[in-house]
Image 1: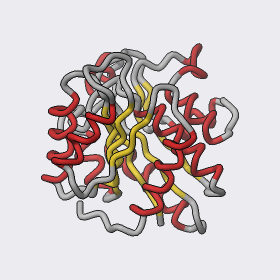
Image 2: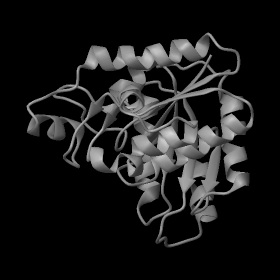
Image 3: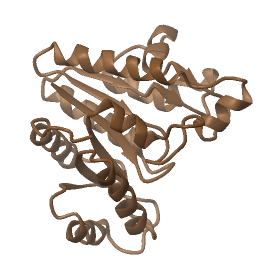
Image 4: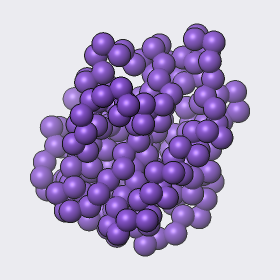
Length: 235
């Protein structure tokens, strides 16, 4: 069984872009992919195609229908805030057991198919609150699947990335790899950022994703997942 949780060091880092690139790479390699982004905020149904949900559906080759949106992102909120805040503004909350069950069904479905992959995309960074008690980190730990951490190459990313990796490690969550998604502005080339991260995370594969993506980076992501899928999660 192959399943990965795509998380990041914060909001606006490029999780969905990286997740979509990975989906396309896996599909090109002949793998079936079940991609979910169960929780999304800032969702506008009139602009669904440009949402993270719409981009994932495009990557997996599914039409943008209401049923498809509901399957990928059952918990959708209008306010562009953390999930707990966005839900509160609508008098709602995320059903924690139901959300975990939704993810596990996709993971189990992928597990029944040879070569299939389940990809769960989180929201915001590792420590974003989902409700009054749970964060994205709790979500990853409960699912017991390896995490793919998306970081930027902006000034400050080293501290943000190492902090996020440290939180995952503290919970015993397996880190399949770090993707340095090239930021619009950066103090040094992304290769220098990656080299520094490698010194502090010597056992973690690092992939550089240039702006706009590249076939080579996409292939590296696929190779990373092929290598990581045999490693048990210690969450």
